[in-house]
Amino acid sequence: MKKRALISVFNKEGILDLASYLSGAGWEILSTGGTSKHLQENKIPVTDVSAVTGFPECLDGRVKTLHPAVHAGLLARRDVPSHMETLNKLGLGTIDLVCVNLYPFFDKVQAGLSLEETVEFIDIGGPTMLRSAAKNYRDVIVLTDPVDYKETIAGLKTETGLSPEFKKRLAGKVFDLTSAYDAAIARYLLDEEYPAFWPLSLKKARSIRYGENGHQSAALYFHADRPGALGGMEQLHGKELGYNNIRDLDLAWKAACAFGFYPKGVASQENTGSDNTASGNTAPIGSQDIAQLGLDAGNSGKKICCVAVKHNTPCGIALGATLLEAYEKTYACDPVSIFGGIVASNVPVDAATAAKLGELFLEIVAAPDFDDDALEILKRKKNLRIMKALRAPKETHEYIAVDGGLLVQESDKKLFEKWEVVTRAKPSPEDIRDMIFGMRAVIFVKSNAILIVRDEAAVGIGGGQVNRIWPAEQSLERGAKVTVDGSPARVLASDAFFPFADVVEAAAAAGIKTIVQPGGSMNDKLSVEACDKYGIAMVFTGTRHFKH
Image 1 (spheres, helix red, strand yellow):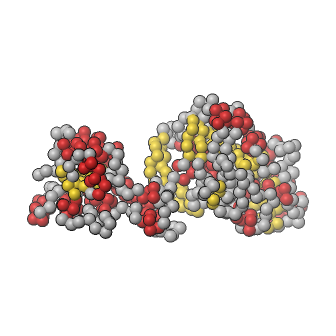
Image 2: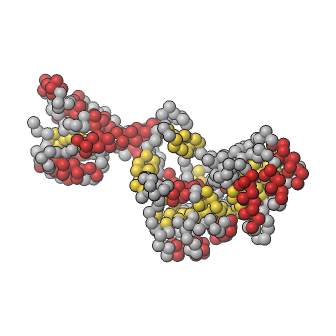
Image 3: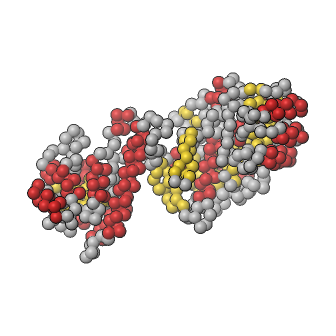
């Protein structure tokens, strides 16, 4: 019996080579629509599917292959006599190869089309044929990826044909694809923050040489239906990114963009909390909270931010009137730890800043863009990875793998719920500005986290400790060594409440004048009384920022 192949592809890469071989080897090729026309234009004989089904395409092509003549030919087991007898009785033939790829829903869901337009790119017949063929993979070759055409042709040319292992892998690729495809559709159509099944549609970007350590394998995946900030980054120079590089880059970029995102040509922004995708200008974390509470304090307008990250925690973060100023303040926070770290900025890198960056060994520099002369300077570092970031972070949820599952939570975008001065002393306007900066920055430091701030710059960072006094002591010690314009730090920001008065005691000894923290401890009164004793102003925000 003459073998038959059904070919219906949106992506026509490599399809002529496959179809030419099959036709030349005596296979009958069944096809539909645009694929049929493409093959015929290239002199490859084609039988229209409607000639097999005895039923014309209808509903604007929505119904073409959804027919027993197709699916019986795919699902019939050749080793089951009753199946073959049924085909003979019904006058149906087998289909021995299916080559199908799907309507580009992954792309179209990102194209800003209307609901009605987007739904038209949900493929029905394609996934149905693929699933039928994959279920019967011992008898039916099923192809979804042009990368497999060459090996398929080579296998068919052998006396034994394709190996069972290869056919099984092809079938597995079907369900790998269709599960991601269905997940993207589910995520698009569902209006639930936490549905019964969490839909993930991830596509492998590349293998990574190794993971967190040399003995761990790793790979990078991006959402197929929305690449996100990292998926939209362009590497301009340097070695391939490793696993730890990617994790640190993710944190650094999120921290930098917590103060806004300014590609070339964006001069300022309003603190409305909106996302202006036309200009690429994204409002900072908590800007809506600030506006609603009437806490302007110089927080409107452009905020140039520079962040240094080492081992997935900031070792410096600052704002400046220029990027060079922001970088120098960031560097001053911890000149030791920045070595071998990652630097990110939310504005394009200029030559003056690039020259300073070039004085250090850094793993990565990331920014919305790079001036030509800045790029020339940075490229002198052979291995430095230079990342051009095309978009700000926009993910609404975060995922943490646990053994056997996934923890899912809303991203931490709310800065504070209230602004309650709980002490007799009141913060100055300058201190309010630094308190707001400190709370934005401390979000990205591992708990327990304490930041010492002066002039919108972290001068001491302590985090990742199992109690609150240790990071307080660490950051205060560091902050005492770093001054901005000769002035000592005045502000301490904490990611969570104080269970004891010990942090206030340490802050008072170091000369801190203002503390901002969420509040909510059973022992809040002890901290407030200690602040009043030392003349320190304290503000409760009502919003905790644990980062584990």
